[in-house]
Length: 329
Ligand code: NDP
Image 1 (spheres, rainbow, N blue to C red):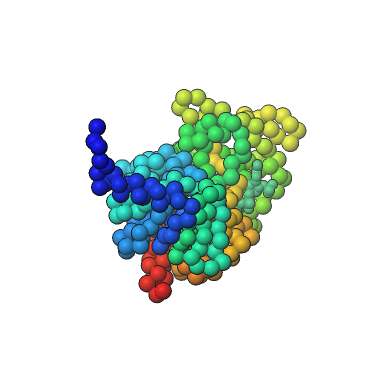
Image 2 (cartoon, rainbow, N blue to C red):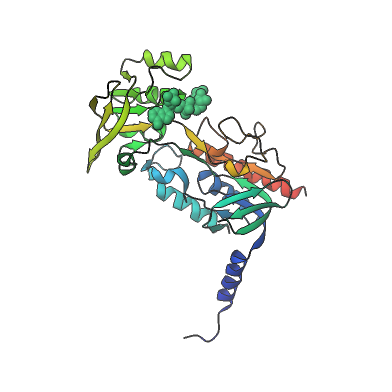
């Protein structure tokens, strides 16, 4: 057994002490570990901003719940969501990003340095903050839905629709997202059932008409989902309850949940402008928020595109904006 610690070990110990101490000063703090957070980290690290990144509640973000990602440029054979996120993490670490487990539980963005509380105890004082906390797709909350997540149950038709080419699928929801997902899937799949709990669609008139005019979409008004059924191959059907409470079973292979998203912005909302749903508002064409030195990127500020590649692009913008900001101090 060695009697003395190597220099490397001492450095590791010091780093650990720094992590464990109550208050830590950081130049650039990145919150969130999806494509936006990691891309921001890659750019920030390469710009010598010594970024510290906290991974958050769902390390790797929403993509870790997706099986195959085929639309991210640079992967001709496709890649699984978890593998892609691990690659992004390694790339961020390769340039010196300090990636840590931990959830930002509170924030004071009233003045610089900004104070972010991690895991309800540790305080980070940051000269700049990049918020990349993403959005969480809402699910129905059924046990069978959780069981088949990534095996037929999805919350993103653009990501996963292709796997159901020529097959029958269902979309649940009656808003613009559900209408869009249903029409998108109708172009790929044999038949799309649109399951709506009310007797009308909440989606805009134009989307409503598009759905109604698409031959292979069948709208099931006043139906609710009771259970998703399947086997080792994944989803094979869904049991619904109609208006009279009777059970109706339809055979499908894909079940797309489109009942809305919730941006993870609560702890910042007192200091930043958000829209009525909670998406952080940024200056058009940039990642700058109302608080100088605080930047937002990815799904927490984008209710529209919500793609890994657009999130990555906005993460890049946030790091460049942070670099300019820090350089101007
Ligand atoms: P919305 O909140 O507008 O719609 C959610 C839908 O899901 C509603 O029909 C709702 O039903 C239904 N729903 C909610 N919970 C359940 C549940 N537990 N079981 C069954 N159904 C449920 O969310 P969207 O994501 O559709 O849209 C969000 C915002 O983004 C909207 O402002 C929308 O206009 C906008 N958007 C715009 C687009 C565009 O302009 N191209 C595209 C996509 C979104 P109910 O009506 O009964 O409450």
